[in-house]
Length: 313
Image 1 (tube, rainbow, N blue to C red):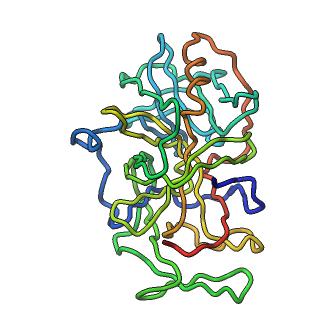
Image 2 (image 1 turned 120 degrees about the vertical axis):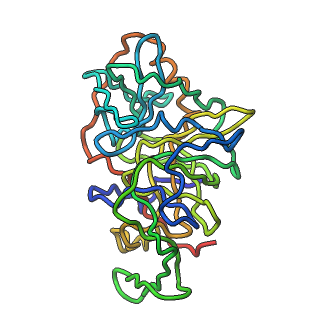
C-alpha cells in the first residue's frame, strides 16, 4: 500500500499546470464524451465541472437538493458545467468523515438550481481492484503536440537537476501546453493508499503512468475531477482525483521533477468513494444536512506527493 504518512509528503501552494496527460497523445484527443457501448460508453462526462478553475462532480438531484462532491482542498464554490454556472448554496458544505469521525479530503455541498443531469451511481463495497481500468475526467492542460520528452538527471548536485535530452534518457514522459478543457482518459489501478494532507486520513487508490498508449495521468489543478469505473454493465463514480506522486530525493525537498511534467513512473491518487459511500448517501438523503466548517487553507491545487525515486517500468 502506498502510504502518505511518509516524510516525503508535501502540499504545493504554487500552481503546476492543470492537465490530464495521455501517453501517445498529441493534445487533441478525448475532449468530448465517448460515444461507444459498454466500457467505451459515456461514464458521466457532463457531470464533471469546474470550481474556480479546479474540479467538482455533480452527483445528482436528491429530493430537490442538488449535490456536488469535490476535494476539501478545492472547497465550496460555484460549479460550472458545460458553460453554465450554478451558484453554490452558502452554508451547505459538509466535510465527509471517516468512521471514527475524523475528517477527510472530501467535501459535499449543494448548488441552487438543477442542471438536469443524471444522478451518478456511487461505487460501494470495495474500490476497483489492482489491475482494473478506471476512467478519469477532469479539465486542464494537456501534453504538447511534439510528443514524449526525455531527461537526464544529475544526482551529483543538490538539488538534482533534470536536463532534456534527445533520444533516450534517465526518465521520459511529457511536458504540458498552455490550454485545454474537459478531457477523459484511462488508467490502471496499481495499489491502495492512505494519506493525510491536513484534512484528515483519507483512503484512496493509485494508478500508474507508464509508456502505454492511452495511459493517463493527472496534473496539479485536476483536484476534484472524477474517476469512473465500469462494472457489471454500469458506470460508477469510484473516486475523486486528489493527488499525484512525482519523483524526488526525499533529502532534497521540494521535489526536483520539473513542474508541468508527467513522467513515466509517476502516480495519480483518487479518493476511494467505496469507503465513504455510506456517509455520502446519508448526507444526500437528508433535506437539510448539518454543516461543518471547512478549512479554507490551500488554494485548491492538486497536491503532489514526493516519492522515493524509482526507475520507470
